[in-house]
Image (cartoon, rainbow over all chains, first blue to last red; front, side, top):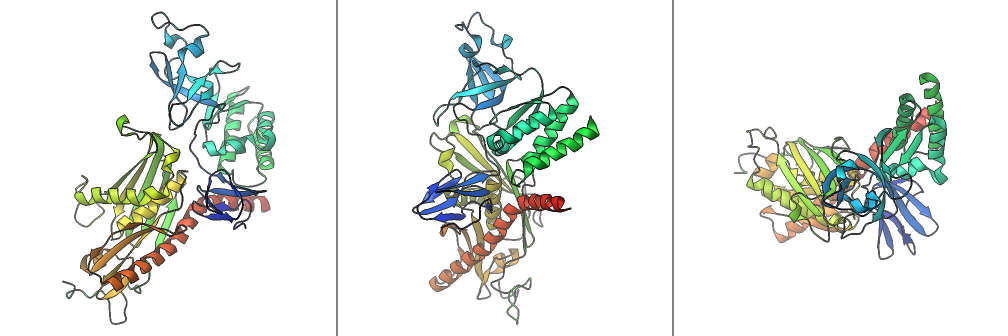
Amino acid sequence: MFFFENRQIVTPGDLLAEGDYIAGNNTYKDGFRIYASRLGLVEYEGRTVQVVALNTVYIPSPGDQVIGKIEDLNVNGWVVDINSPYKAILRASDALNKPFRQQKDDLTSFLDIGDLILAKVLAFDRTIDPILTIKEPGLGKITQGQIVRVSPAKIPRIIGRKASMINMLKRETECKITIGQNGIILISGPSPEHERLAILAIEKIAQEAHTSGLTDRIAEMIRKEKSARL
Amino acid sequence: MSGKIRLIDENGLRVDGRKPNELRPIKMEVGILSNADGSAYIEQGKSKILAAVYGPREVHPRHLALPDRALLRCRYHMAPFSVEERKSPAPSRREIELSKVIKEALEPAVFLEKFPRTSIDIFIEVLQADGGTRCAGTTVAALALADAGIPMRDLVVACAAGKVDGVLVLDLNDLEDKEGEADLPVAYMPNLGLVSLLQMDGLLTIEEFKQALNLAIEGCKQIYKLQKEALKAKYIAIKEEVETCLQS
């Protein structure tokens, strides 16, 4: 038995369903009852009950692409802030492509404090801090573009179903948009004006993430702004 | 002492004109501080309280971190201007106690085990105090936690009941608390039906205690509805704005 309509806003502790259902994201099960554990929109899909949260913190997960900032150096690598409760580690041997020798190699010549990097989470669990890698093509130091921060909860909405939203954004704003799962987005476009337009659109998506028909509305907004600005 | 001031008049009404089982007018708002991860504000009668939540974040100092769950820290503080006579801004014995008590009232509601080695910090700032601040502080802190996106089993609501001039009353104000015979603050998780804070000051018979507890829980349930509305209000406002935009 369901107690709400699909996509209705629920608060922590709300009884969502009773019976033989599966507790999805942001819910918890007590016997045959499923409750919400976060503020968000409830979704009933088949036998699973889940809540699409309106605000979350970023918890790293292996395979996630993230954007981070070098915060500190230590003997064998860098400490990276990835907008999460846990500081990430990037090992020197990972970035150097050759064996790392402490006496000879100067870490700051590769990445210095304050640099932004695009990286992938290699490993993380409850007991160790997340470990990053930049060994894949396309990853590494960020040299150009603008950064927008949104709540990590809004990232799936910015990507959209089958990447519909992000593809529309890229097409309409002519910008290259790189999404970090940790809520940090890199935008680089043909001109600062194009980038500003993309930032405006992303902020609007984050603000109105819980409303329907968003992709069309954003597309319309971009076209209108584009003719006014460019 | 209670003979000097009449707390219940001949019509059975209280000093501020309320019926014995009536709450003070309550106003709540969520997400009002942009620097905090979650925040909320409450006005309950003349009491005005602000709450901010930071985290889960790294624990400082490091050695306090717990390997299996998050550390929940709470600071209840009264602003020097919150009471009639200036209160020293240094934490008093009472504030330290209330910080601990509120922390323990919220702890069972939060899924602390989901964020090992981190801390969740709650700051409760009383801007104006007129009784019932530990209860209102708990209510508003729970709202700020939910706003910060921290997973919770249920919201926590708190409300006091007590006895003034021989009558059991709900949601005492400062005068009733000081001049009355008993005060019974209760924190409650309405969906789970669990009590997470129960204190008593003064004298009640066992029968009166049972009635007062039920009265306080009824009060909690009323506040709970307002709390839920306040949480949703921010997002419903955006949704309605979008819908009216579409229609025009």
